[in-house]
Amino acid sequence: MAENLSEEEGMEVDQIDEEEDIERWRESMSEQYSKKQTELSALEDENKITPNGLAEFMEDNDTLFVKLLKKNKEEKNEVALSVKDAVIMNTLSRLCREQTELMSANAIQFKHQEFAERIINKLQAVRTDDDQVQIKKKRLVAMGKAVSHCFQRAPNMTFLNGILGHEPPEKKERKPKETSAKSTKASELKSTQAVVLEEAQTTGAQTEQMVAHAGRSLVSCFKSNGKKPVNFFKFVIDPSCFGKTIENMFHVSFLVKEQKAKMLIEDGAPLIRPFKVKATAEGVAAHGDDTRNQVVMNMCMSDWERLVEAYDLQEAMIPPVPEISSSQAGPSSRRD
Image 1 (cartoon, rainbow, N blue to C red):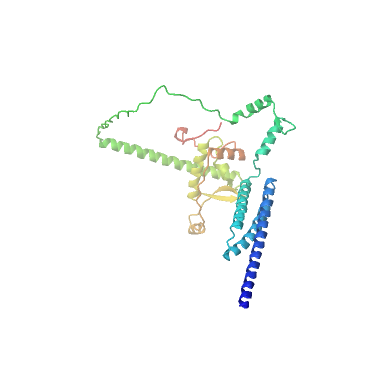
Image 2: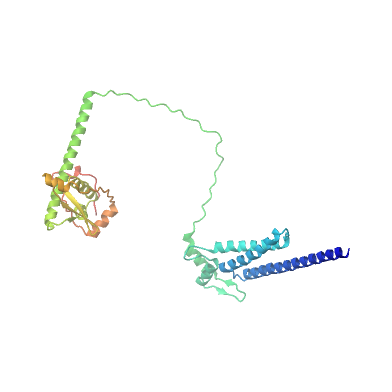
């Protein structure tokens, strides 16, 4: 009987010791949570929160939370400590959000306090002893006039003299148009076809003449340049007419296609020279494997003007063809 009592007393003593240990642990944890909350509130009031400081607070709070989580897993729910942990986490989350909002990728960040100080200095305001700012009326009016062009005025309001009609308008019936079918005579069709063919033949002949004229001009410029390649832009650009420049580029493209001219690139600049393939089998074999590259060039009016100024062009290397009148040429834009 005495042994049973001693065992029960021993168990009660162990239980009391365990409860005292738990109570001391609770007091220690509560004290640490309260200390962290006090330090965090003090830094927030003094506006001394920094990203590194927030990171340290989060690491310390995470350490305390691990200890609290371990106790909760032992079926000892610490509600009061969990509430304190939640309060600190809520404060840390809010401060992190505020720090994130203050971040900016711009080199200069807008701050309303700094902006207000600049306005005060600009208007030469007077500060009183109680940190109040006094600005003269004339300076405020002058500043308003100076920045008034940056703001749009409110539009004037106009009113109707009455209400709009609520009945839908009458739909007007559209009458189909009567088309009278006219019979076309066979003689008219033949005459139209003849005119179209004649115009096509005339245009083709003019193009051939312009291509041949461009080839002769290229040979002449090549000889005048000491039998050296000629700058492509200097050759095709007409400094007095943008349309003529586009026509010259079009005609020169036929020379390159027919292997009557050859394009070169030297020092980043396009050059052109006359080229002739021999009709013999050796000549065809020698130049049959040459690589051909087709390029689409885009040139607008501003590009043409810049090239004329860059090369200081005064006259065209491809003179106009006397046989073709100006009325038959394409559209042009004269340079004043």
